[in-house]
Length: 84
Image (cartoon, rainbow, N blue to C red):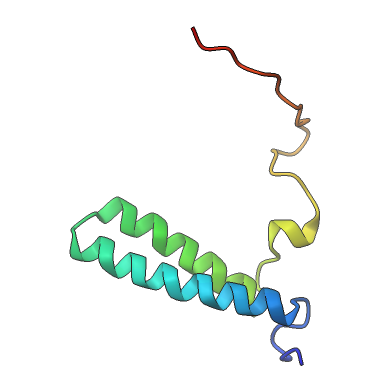
């Protein structure tokens, strides 16, 4: 059963986000212990993002069914890149 605070997320998706947020919290703690400040910061941003999605304060990109592009910019499929 879906919780009232998470009406748009399936139980499986909610469970996945809860797990990801838990792992991100542990990774952040590890990064802080190693004094990897910028890495800890980036992990914390991901942790916060997961929490926002769980609470329904920010829709996930997948739930919006949109691509990650700037407004007005088309996303073109790239070809193969040959590195010599």
